[in-house]
Figure 1 (cartoon, helix red, strand yellow):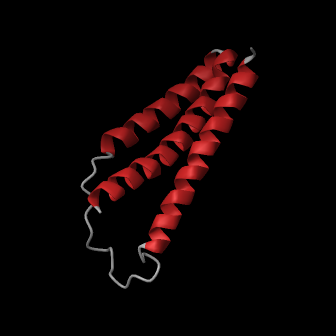
Figure 2 (tube, rainbow, N blue to C red):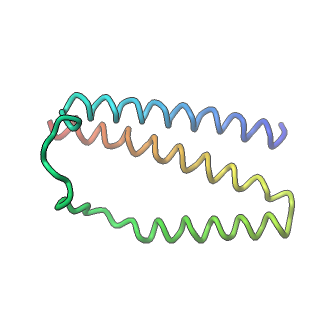
Length: 104
């Protein structure tokens, strides 16, 4: 199986997870009244610690760009990172949906 086929299959799976997660997250937000909510989120504090994750993403991007310049075969790492990111975002919405259902 060629690398193109692998990336195509992983991309299809990642896109499916992403769109299912976004659809469930948007539906949940609209049903719970986020769109009509007058409360400001300016004072809201996100307890998540995403600094380390963001730093890892920056370093991973720089490494992928550098490696693509050194070994042309590693050019496929970029699409794989993008697919992983989209899958992670969709998964985050799905995990949040489960946590939301447990809380209610």
